[in-house]
Structures are given as structure tokens and as C-alpha cells.
Length: 157
Length: 288
Image (cartoon, rainbow over the protein chains, first blue to last red):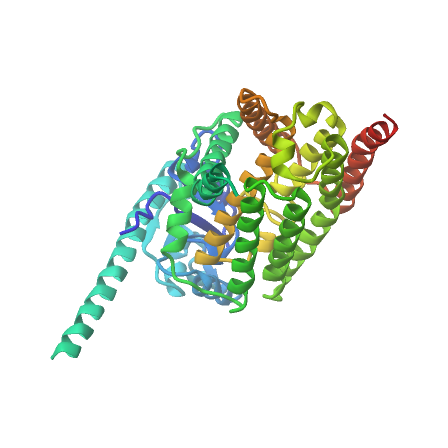
């Protein structure tokens, strides 16, 4: 089975963040933290992305965008909510326009807390996401195998 | 066709993606070192391609894969013809046809970023095509033949007659290898103003095919660089390999030290350099 753990490509979407977490996400790619040593690349293209990184809460205006980005990503895919706003809505939770965290719109797998989330925490979140990414591919292959063997049994029986 | 040529062709088909991928890995590693980063592992490009092949295939247009595969086949054919020692003019014609199929692969999706990227790809072709054609003319004037086999087995290295053509070719290599400042249509770096330009609508398997084809193409282009150096002396092969590595390092250096330019600057500069260096060289060759 293919080892896809070594090549996670990110898609970073800024919901209604204050830009604090966005700066920290970009800090992960600087020479100090150098996320590329894990093969992590920050693509701007959902068609080529594996991990969706969301910062900031969801509001009525960006909800369709977030949903569309998620749907445009090919399987297997993982969603990481970075920062407390993306996790729960944070300090903006009770604002009239905020619907809540990213999980109000799409299924979130990993929650990275913090205001703003530290680069170490973000990289840790991505590494956990990578494990899940591999697990999803393996499960997909397993299902395919079972389906195939099931068909064979049917054909023989 | 002699056995050595058959062996060379088989080696190209089998090992060009490996060499191209390794060169790409070195590129990313050296770039990281230049930016004082650790950088990804050397085999990172291969990990990327393996992952891309195992992802779900989503496509915007079902004809894209046809155009992409045509591009792949034509680029491999270019390399095969080159390493079989046939006509260099034909090699470059086949390469240009392949590049046109890449344009169609971007265009067929009819999405804004991809279309704009494809248009820029055409502009890039316009910028590098004169230098490519002049390279063939130069080889003919210097060696009296278009045949790659005969050029490679001549008594004197072609670069002694064609230093200006060599500079022009190295210059357009930056465009062809999609290195900054001329990575207009699509970039190897994370972001650009057109998201991913030409490759925006290529995901999973399609992107992997594009990537592998690029490796084939790079090996062919570096082969042409080597052709300038190589002569009947077997030691010239070592010199050719050294020059190829030096050229590749130069491209990485240019990539890391320059910002992307607009298309009109690219066209002016590349045509200017081509006409100036290759043009003067051509006049001198014709007078002597």
C-alpha cells in the first residue's frame, strides 16, 4: 500500500480570522520552523490539496465557500481547525454574523487550540492529520478489497 | 540503429524519470539550503508523485487526460529521437508539438486561472522558440549536419564555435524549466498570482502525469546542453556531465535570486538575449 504520509499538501483558508492564526500558519513555513522538511507544501489549489487548514470562525458569507473548497478536494482528505475561533467561534462566538466553529459546516478532524495557535501546535496538529490521512487511504483500500472478495464469493456461490 | 543507440534509448525511457526526479529533489534541497532551511528529503518528488497517484481522481474536463497523455508521449518521443541520434531539428519540432498539447490540456477546462495559465504558456513558447530554432541552425553551421549522432562524434566540441548560441540556450532553459523569473504559466513554488496557473485544474493522477513528463523533458533539455560539449573524445562525456550539473545549479541560483517578471519583459529580454548573443555568433560563423 502506498505510503502517502510523506507528502501532505495544505490548503489554507482564512474564515473570519483576525489574521493572528494566519500569520502563525505562515510562520510554520519560514526557516525557523520549516514545515517543508516533512514534505508539507502550502498549495493554493483545492484540487491538489490533502489537508484543509481553517482559521477563524464561520460566518454566513463564507459558509458556501468553505463547503465548496472541502468538496473540491479529492479523497482522502483531512480538516484541521487552527485556533480557538475555528474550533468553537472563540471570542466572536456570540456575534450576530458568526455561526460558530468550522465544524458547523464541514467535518473537522483535528482541533488545534490557541489564540493565536503557536507554530509548534500547528505543526503538531498537521502531523496528527497526516496519520489520519494515511489511515483513511488504508481504510479505503481495505473496503475496496473486501468489496472485491465479496463479489468473488457471490460469483462463485 | 546500432546497439549502443538502442541501449541509450531504453536507458532514457527507463531512467529519465528517476534522474529527473532526483534532480528535482536536489533542486528543492539546494533551494532550502540557500534559504537556510533544512528542506524536504531528497526523494520528496517521488513521494509526491506516489501520493498523487493514490488519490481520488476528480477532473473538470474528461478530455484533459487525452491531451496530457499526448503531451507525455510526444515529450518521450522527443527524448527517444534525441538519444537515438536522429535529426535535432525534428526533436525540437516534436517537443513544440508536445508543448502545444499541454496548452490544450490547460485550455480545455475553460476555467479562468487555467486558461490564463495556458495563454501564458503560449507566450512562453513564443519567447523561447527563436532560441531553440537558432540552436539547430548553429549546430548545422558548426558541424555541417543536423544529425545528433554526428554532432556528438565530431572532432571539436560544438561550444567552441557556438558560445553565443550556448548562452541563448541556457537563457531560455530558465523559461523551459519553469524557473523564476520566467515561471509565468505555472510555478513550482507554493503560490503564484494565478493559484497554480496552467495546472490549477490538474489534480491527483493528472498532475502526477504532468510532473513525470516534466522530468522527461528536463533530462532531454539537459541532454541538449551536453551536446554542446561532447565530442569524439570519451573524456568529453565527463566534461558534458559537469557542465550539465553546473547549468542546473545556475538555474536553481537564478530561481532563488529573482522575482517573477511580467510577460512583456520576458518576451523582450529573451528575444533580446537570443538576437544579441546568438545573432552575433551567427554573423561571425557565416563570415568565417
